[in-house]
Image 1 (cartoon, rainbow, N blue to C red):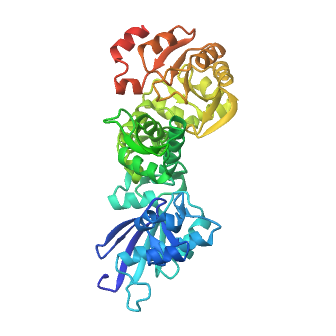
Image 2 (cartoon, rainbow, N blue to C red):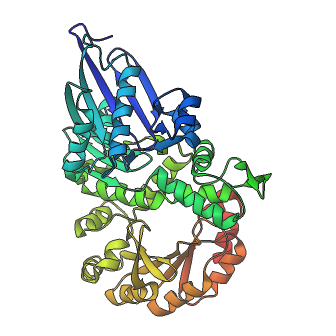
Image 3 (tube, helix red, strand yellow):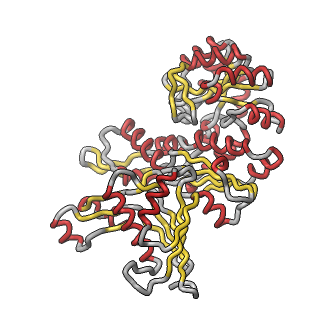
Length: 466
């Protein structure tokens, strides 16, 4: 039951979707992070339990006041019921490894609990309060650090832990990571679920499905890049079971993670001492449920090769150019700070390309998570005036769809900038390349998914572009 000295060491990961516990007695368990109480006397009679936890709670949710008490990897604030749910979940986890709360002879429990990399002090205090009475000693550490420690990946390593509520990053330099070594994105599995729901409702407005069904589909079929098979599901449509192909929607939802994760990954790598950056680039570990998305690792590797995104300081730009990159691609900082854009274009003449990512004609920044009032044509004009070598223009609504590029907006930005423009987003055929080639100022076309899916042959595309 415990170590020979009467102490049981436990590690706990309280996750938004799943929670896990591992103990020094060898016990290991993972449960769904759901807690529910019967809603009325009928439910109590049927269930015969005062509280249900994990899969049981999820399966019987129609009879329960169901709680998913962890939000973005932390205890939800302002709800006594959610705090009670976390306490029940912790008690359940400890029971699974053999600790009975009311047993006077139970071992002393020493717990290590992981939290998101950028968890605030107040969040940690809430966790300490929830653990009160369940652990005799408590240490709170960042979740990606626990992964690094467990794998003994402690030197020149980048951990990317993709959970349901957050994606956490940690660079390990042979010491305990500082705040500068870590990042948290509030964009992870739940965001993919929400995106998939929106895409499916747009494509199949009469189909009936729940968020729980969507999560199951994602866990079974999730991928980025070229599909290895079609994702086929059965849902009620007007009361009749109907087969739907959700492959394209699932791919688009999963790939919404790639830009922000890539950008944060590159930003952290660029902060590493230059002589160690190559080692870190070759020692990146994906963890968490999101790491199971098929093809995600390859997509992030490609982002490292491109060396675009996350370049927000002059030192970052200088480092990648000195490392041998022909151009540095800047996006977010270029849009938010015209003075910075002008400075780097003067310092690195003809070696700076500006990424203009647009949503409905307006510039999207921070890995496409925020849309500015600034119009894409205005940023194109500013990039040219600053002395940028070229522009990469992406219509993010078309990106990854193979549904054809936005010819009108591409032409508008090319005309406003009057410098070489590379068109990106939506290319799905040779005809798309032909049409883009007729636009004055378009010097090149970026083709991604259509190559993976086979819709465009690379040799034919290169011949067409010439």
